[in-house]
Every structure is written in structure tokens, then in C-alpha cells.
Length: 429
Image 1 (tube, helix red, strand yellow):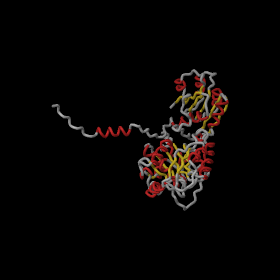
Image 2 (spheres, rainbow, N blue to C red):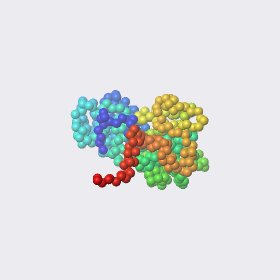
Image 3 (spheres, one colour):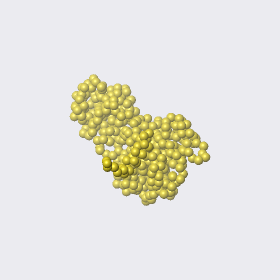
Image 4 (cartoon, one colour):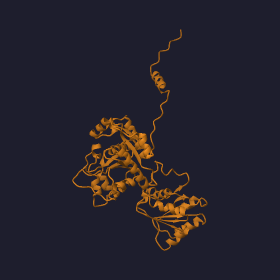
């Protein structure tokens, strides 16, 4: 599928935009300007191109043709045109040295006069009008695979607590359940707390197998294996449960879960990671590589410090992504001194995605029954909060309640009267 990028492209940090990562590919770029060279080089550091081997050099079309006369072409070639040479003639020459299957991205000049249809006829897979930024390059390369391969590239949402016991798992499980039910998206919850995970309890499931079988398998997990390990919670929600067992210790390398996440991305539109409160190579990697991050915190000093630190580190590691989000949980606990929500938000320099009130009866009832909040109290305000979080994290935007009209009470009365049987008409005498 060939697309044209222009100045009216979506905001790169708009919550609805989802750029899926690429598989293991080789990318070579030939740039005419320093700005493009810098943008392509920076794109190589983006998390979505982490598996790509990307090199960038000067020279444009002429340099690319010279190089590929004596060596095979990579999976993707990025060519910049500065408008000084006939781009169609150059692409014809490039086609003569290009291997079958190589995909071509052209970064054009506003002065280029070549019709877009002619570029497509010469095998150009994507055309981007320069000058380009880092995210333009990332978007263009990633789109070659997410669109042309016609595969599902699932959105990964990672939920983690700023401190232990803040209710991050409860938030993750309720958000995932709401995405599956209200948005009709096939979803998977992965409980990454292998020793003490609670997802099985919260969904009232007791699967024999789960995430431990996938990550500890000698073979690379494939789609068939993942299907066997998933426990069905609802029609659209599945669970990859933790063993919640202390029979062994769970020490993992930084890339231990990559194959599991990659496999599920290919078949599942939404994946929610319930990340335990710990800072290790694999938890940091899971957070950095997620499409969206939600940090759950309580309104106290330790949570304030930890949330601030996590936001700073994750923002720096994901310069081309939307900043991590946070929500405040258990707000308004009786007789507890708390940091005001406004003061908390001022320190974070952003507003929380949700402020969830403390309600021990509601949450304990749901937990003990193995139910979600919406199942216990359908019309509770906390249920509405989870619905808004689900919409925003799934790229649907926040659901806003319609404004109540001042005439609503009067209209109700009139409607009630209109429903009564009318008095019989008297006949004229």
C-alpha cells in the first residue's frame, strides 16, 4: 500500500495514532541534506526500529545507484531527492540495480514535479515531502510492514505501580476488561508478576498454564503455543496468567519476554501488561517498548517521588512517543493525610488520566468475588472512570457526557403528561 505524507499529517503524539514496530530488517538511507541525515540517524534509535539495522549516509540517488551496482540491496532503501535531478530518471536507474522485494521510500523536495502516479509505477512504496522530522522517518518505514503485510499489529498498554500496593493490577485488569467489553476489541492481559500475580483471582480463573510456560519454553513461542496457553475470561478477553508460585525464582534477562509480546502483537489488537513494581532490565524494557504507559500512584510523598522519577526516565527513553500517563488511585482515604490532586499534578507538570476515589467496600467486594468493578456496580462513577481510561488508551479519545439541558425537568413533565390518556371530547350541543 503506497501512501503520500504531507504537511497535514496527524499530530505525531495524537493518542489515536498507532505506529507498530518493524520486524528484523535492514534499512539503508542516502541523504542529500544534513537535516535529513540527522532525522534518519535519530530514527534508528527509536524503539519501533529497535530490530532494524539502519545505516545512513550522504549522496542521494546517485550514491545509492553506485553502491548497489556491486552489492545486494537491503529490505528498505530510503532515498532523498533535492530536486536538482530528474527523480523519475534516477528511479529508473535505481530499478536496474534493485533486488526483487526491496521497498523504496522517497523523501521528496517541494520543487519535485514528478506526478505521484509515476512514482508508484516505478515501485516507490512511500513518498514523504521534505523536510522531515525523526517521527516522519519512523512512521514511513514502519508503515511499509504494518500496512503492506496486512497483519494485525496490536497496541501494547503497560500498567505499573509507582509503589507496591497502590492497586496497579486492579486498574490494569479493569481497563483491559472494559476495552474488551465496551470497545469490542480482542484483548489479552499478561500478568508479569510471576510469583505473586493476582489476575487469575481477579478474573476468577485458575489456568494450569500461562506466561511461565511461554517464557521458560526451550522453543520460540509461536501463535499455536500462545493459543493453548491463553485462558478465556470473556468472549473477547483472554488471560496469560502468572503461576503465582514460589517453587522457583524468576530471574530473567532483559529480552526474555520479547518473543511472547511479538507473537501476541500479530494476532491481538490490544495487549495489556500488568507490570510488577520492580526495576529490572526486563521491566524497564517492557515499559519503554509499550505503545502507552500508565503509572498508578497514591497521593503521598513516596508515590510523588517515584512517579516523577519514572516519568522523567521513560520520557527520555521514548522521545518520539506520547509521554507516559499516570492515574491517582485510592484518593480520599479516611483519616489519611494526602497530597492534594492539584499539587500532585503541578509537580508532574501534567494532569492525571483519572482520579479514582477510595472505596474499600466496592473494591474488596469485586476482588473477593472475582469480578470487575462494572460487574459489581454498573452505574458507579469509578466504572465511568475505567470506561474513559479504556477509550483513551485504545485510541478512541475520552468519552464526554452530554451536557444536561436546563429544560430537561420541564421536558420530562411534558413527556409524562403526553403519556396520559386524554379526556373525552364533549359533543357540541
